[in-house]
Image (cartoon, rainbow, N blue to C red):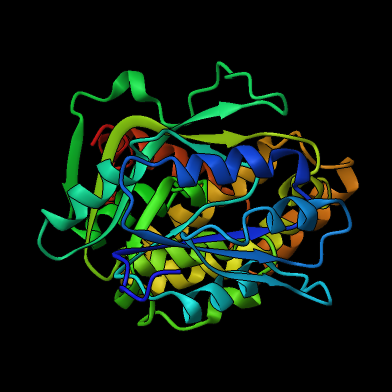
Length: 321
């Protein structure tokens, strides 16, 4: 490991992703931008992940290789551990089952370095299956994009792109300023399923957000993802209600705007086909209504506002920004 302080700290948190690890690590080491350190954190994997990781122990890029003796139970706790070890000005959390285009870091770091007051830069993603085949799904709706790069005021970005969805849906697709992350606290580590949404919301409010429309990230979809299991029981919805309430407060939304956001959230629950059964969906919907003290009528108010924009949330217009 070099004693020179790197510009970027790459944090690689892993748990039982042995089959993807080599591709992930090689995609980091083979970046065209080389001013980085690599921090590898294994959360007590039960497969042969550690055997693969140890092959890279002597790499000059690897500054830390830590294997937990007990599983922490939280990827977000692993993030926090990595933040404390990171020496770089910027941080990239490279999830262990994804991989990146060789110019990923070069592209995003150049954008951050050349944009004053920027704190986050992210790119579009290819969705891939377990075997690495690119899927036809386009979560970025890149066919609607009329520009290659766009810079947003952080609050405007959160209101337009994070309030009704987590647009930075895969942690691997973004790079951020370390000093900005120190300002948001550790509340995100208390979440099991939605901590990333909370984390990106708070981070984006710390400065400008840069969107790069090149698909430089490869986001793997497979059945072992924690979110897949959580969807069956609606656990992600139950947890996300606190994040929505936090967003409403931080964005200083009016009472009618609050009701519309809650209506959108309820609509997502109603149309979701991921629940294990109808009883679980009813239970989750009841929980949300009780927490927000809003009825099912909020869904109709949301739908009406989407057409008429009486709340000034600009739902339809913002989706094309």
